[in-house]
Length: 242
Image 1 (spheres, one colour):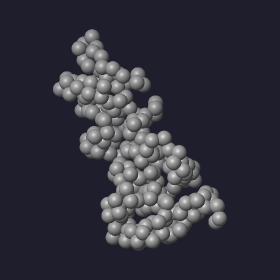
Image 2: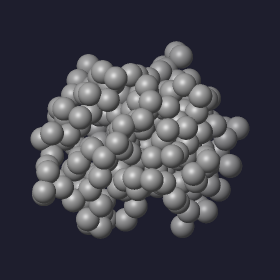
Image 3: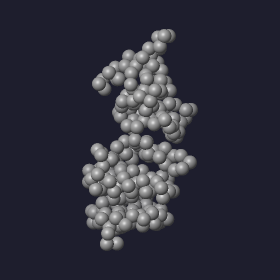
Image 4: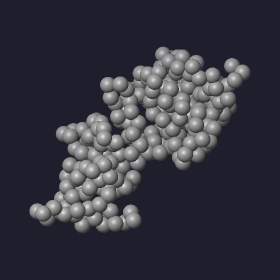
């Protein structure tokens, strides 16, 4: 493969999954598979000996999993990481570990192509800002969707799920609002009331209704009530971003 610019390491304990990544990569001649691994210990060795530019890394493998590999190697010494998994609940941890992308198996050709586009831009240094940003991965009928936290406007509780609002669309995430708040609160999200988390940067203004209720008006026009007990802290958080 004379035109290959970047070496790829594929790490998954399932032979079928490794073969699937190889087949999908065949459509991208700039990338060449330089090695395959079945567990985390093999990955650590291959990273030192093969020095790949990219690693497709399964999260759950025998012995050391994908997160264990990154902890031992440290994120700064890792190549570009694309996580592979059959589950979407590890998404936030994956982006905390500075993964470039997160693929939920089985991976569609369209979704894989989007990942390769991001990888190519990243490896060529064409990315605007850091591509390794925190995001939420949601599963839809058409596959997994990566929603960067900076694009989320607000999140509401929906029984044991969380409904994420972004760009006029909404997605259901299989995670409670309370658990989600613990994980993304440090990314500029504040509780407006018992059933709503709001991204502070999405707040256009605070207003008061004729009935004396506080409402956060978002840049999209959405109006989120702010409970009385949270009004002072919410207002302070909004002012602090200025």
